[in-house]
Image (cartoon, rainbow, N blue to C red):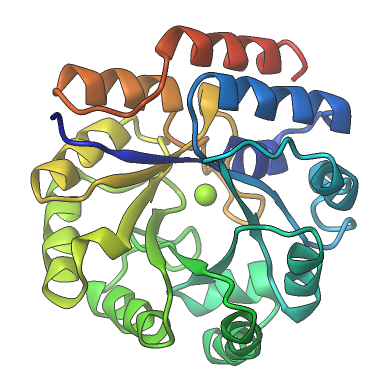
Length: 282
Ligand code: MG
């Protein structure tokens, strides 16, 4: 049997949150249905954040009530705080995701708190999630570079990853939020991470600003990483990271994985159709 690689489709959340066009709920649902038809099994559907700050996801509650429930498909929602968490729980999400940058400046902009304060806030969310047996994954953001602070000391990435791992994070999504990582940097960082954490608890979340995301994925694959985030059509960016381009495109990632002999369970042609239909709306 060929080696399986998990893909978490983040287009409906990380992708759409940075698009200027508001995609109507009905069309978002159609997009999600198309993704499922293409074989995507893990989908980050939305974020329970302030409508004022992220208008493209203002319909998160409405969307969540109508998500197609398909056996084998799991939905994740991003939650910034306990209030958001309670929403995700109410709408029966399978998992929540949290996000913390490894730099003070990015957390200040994105979460309106310094890193320590933001972490404390998450400790409350995690305590509740544990009580509810709700798995949580954590985006360790700006792990390859920060739009405000530049280069990152990998020690910071390990430090915050460990903080969440020790609290029981089901997965650490090591994120190149602004897409500046190089293959050399990826190799160094993933090696360090693998000294601390089991490989099945690590995923990479790469943006493709410098068009090196696929090379970086290949480096990580060679080191044993088997989980990646991506967005159909390569849509997205980060509203608090100026200049950040979209996530690595799911189609290109799947094509690359198949060419390397990995199995994903994804039908590339159907996936292309899903992206095409979405892009017509943007
Ligand atoms: Mg992202």
